[in-house]
Length: 442
Image 1 (cartoon, one colour):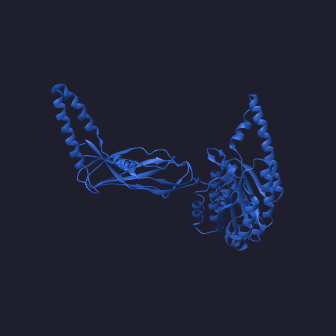
Image 2: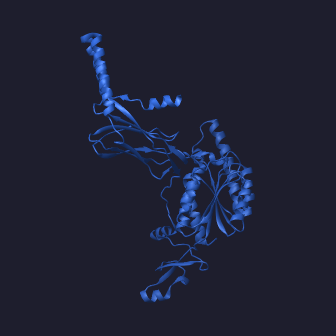
Image 3: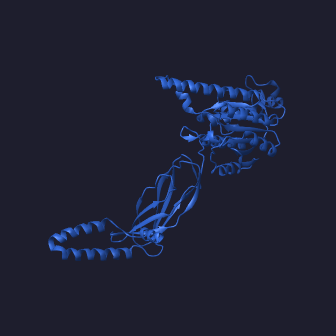
């Protein structure tokens, strides 16, 4: 019964501006010819409204369709297109409203006068607040009749699912080749490559400080100036990105959860590693392994990682590093760079990570990226003015001291460890990856 009532309400016609003005004119008629004249006037208006409703549309003469990107990006404003088609012989006034997913900002009512036998494209912006899979509803379309008295509703089935991926900003160094070109443009001398295990890349003119052993004598004699050989890092190495999805990664910093910052940095790093010819795998864990994508270097591997992490959420549990890393060792036996995105809040969490990192060595090279709150830096730089500020500052100083101590212990275990705010996460992950490649640590 409720569904039937809702069905009738959704399809009930609405009066247009012309019908409202005609009804208001009935008051003037009632003043001049009393109530009998007003009844006749209202009956006439009702007849014209019914006629307008019947003449509004026939069949599928009015059409509407949603056109949206294949994927949307979290926190980025993007446009959704609504295509209105009028295949009648007269222009039509149309109103349409989209049904956005629950929790998103409601879509505006779009209005347009569509000429006869033509289409018109309307647009409205959306900004997805979170990653995940969301569903758009049907389109609510209303057509104004030729007499402009009635708006006739037309249900347009348009339900569809859409995926919201992490927002990928432009990288400072999108790949290894771009990094070296940028360094050369600035006049920076690259760190000397080890010859063993290096692949030849190109020839260039000699620069002060280059290793004399890299001079290409035949090319130098042919061009009558010193030419040196450039070597690039070995390709087809393995990079495993391990993301902690425990309770601490659910904290919000810079407007996003730490897990979202970690996934954005992971996508940047995966893009760079794949562009450099390396294999990239992905591991997400909390109290157990939540997601594992085996390392590959195919063109679609980045898309596989993005699709796999769409529905990844934090869990209100402590991460079990040992179980995750033991499982990783059983799946990836070849030496690899394991980039770990996590957070360290207390000594218990850092001790668990320290013990687990020892399981990765010496087969793998761990790179631990701890994500700290960027608000801490603002609080430490602001002088205290009240007793509460002094108390908060002292507690924060102790927390930072414990984190630095944990980072130092990780470095003693043979891992590369850093404690960074979210804004510096992607760039520093890239820098450390490039540094590992340059130094031949894999």
